[in-house]
Image (cartoon, rainbow, N blue to C red):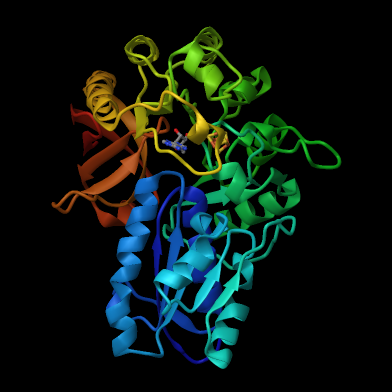
Amino acid sequence: MEKEKGLFYIETWGCQMNEEDSEKLSGMLRNIGYSNTEDKEKANIIIFNTCCVRENAELKVYGNLGALKKLKKENPDLIIAVCGCMMQQEGMAEGIIKKFPFVDIIFGTHNSHKFPEYLNRAKQEGKSIIEIWNEEEGVVEGLPIDRKSDVKAFVTIMYGCNNFCTYCIVPYVRGRERSRKPEDIEEEIQSLVKKGYKEITLLGQNVNSYGKDLVPLLSFSQLLRRLNEIEGLERIRFMTSHPKDLTDDVIDAISECDKLCEHIHLPVQSGSAKILKKMNRSYDREQYLELVKKIKERIPGVALSTDIIVGFPGETEEDFEETLSLIKEVEYDTAFTFIYSKRKGTPADEMEEQIADDVKHKRFNRLIDTVNKIFEKKNKEYEGRVVEILVEGESKTSDDRLMGRTRTGKLVNFYGDKSNIGKFIEVKIVKSNSFSLTGEEI
Ligand code: 5AD
Ligand code: SF4
């Protein structure tokens, strides 16, 4: 390790994939002698890792970049870098440099492993560097990762997406599906377990199509069964599952493998067959409900979560009500709810019958009311029960409680000893609300 060179600050927008990329950037910077700071004003390097899945995320990046002008003026040696999905959009990097000429480095999602090189160049050349690759370079292994938690870790098993849902920008900015080799995944998890990690979440835009590009072929369920054999690992989760690809062998693996948690994130997006078709989701309402029925039968006590979009082009009041009725029928444990956001370059952006903003917002509020009531009902079922939780750390509530999660992913806040962090303990659930449970150690 070299002598400390300075401090870096990373701000991350968007999904777990971006979080993981930031953990890698952080790992690389530590390897070359930098340390992390939570204070932008003290940083020698500021990195914004951007998201473009919805317009809101982009607007936040612009606002935050504007605010850096003052910092750069006060400290001309400050290096400002912008990366992530937003930068993969055509013309975006050039636009950013034009608007914010004080940005030093711009790179994309396919070449973030090159960041230390760009950093050196920016320091030596003293001019802005734009490096965006349109093609991925296969899978880059072996990058250092500076993980946020010591208890649970996210492990990417595949990159990219081949699905092209008509609203979604991800396939354009993250490229085609590429699976990591099972040996590399196993090795990473084994080394995490050696460091004391207990829980792993496998990540991919569509984990169920894992391995289709590998020689020899290996299915997702085969990977799950292999990982279930890792000694010392206690819990395995995964996300995201595309309903069209969640096959029986995966459901069997969850029901048969002791480490696989009873929680499936199964984005439905809409409850209307007509809208699902326009979204290019490749399943209809009935098929989705059949799948849910099968999952509930085969995995007793399973928790289901989902993603829902309101206000997709052409969505009528009836279509929206079908979404509400599907939610009530499935009874999700949690849901990520979104207002449809037009994304340039996607087919839905060109569709007629775009929904007016006020209609979208009204529907969104009704959606929130509906899902909250269901979460509340589902959480109430836990009251009085004794559950096992993995204690993850301090609670985000303002008191000095700890927090942990059940196998089904329920967040439990409780008063307890910090020495329990990283351990499995039993708690009795004494109270519940829409988003969390209150427990007492027993
Ligand atoms: N508008 C709103 N929500 C979107 N999502 C993806 N693209 C859009 C968009 N253009 C949501 C989907 C996806 C989640 C990660 O983000 O629900 O599952
Ligand atoms: Fe986007 Fe659909 Fe791929 Fe998910 S499956 S990343 S929603 S295109």
